[in-house]
Image (cartoon, rainbow, N blue to C red; front, side):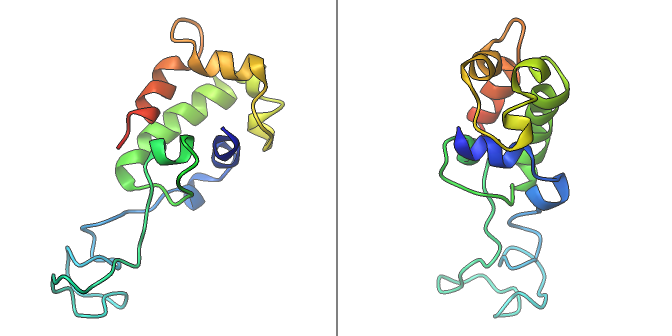
Length: 126
């Protein structure tokens, strides 16, 4: 959860990026300045643009930037946590850059009155 605290306070412009298939460092698109081989697909080219899913961040196995498909999930979880249902429980810890306390963690996992649906969707993002 420590990485969740870090991610939840990052501006969206820092937390997201397009990832794969966009030609920006990947070999799935047209050549650009980041493609070392002109956009051709081969087994020796390494992607320079690495992104992570919402689940990666929650589990502590990744750091921003988020992959573009994970952006909406993160936005929904962040909004629920810091300005929605869990604002009272998480506003003074996670939303201020700290670790979630017991009340915040409970709210994040509560599907009836908290952010459990958003949290679950983020956790299942692969």
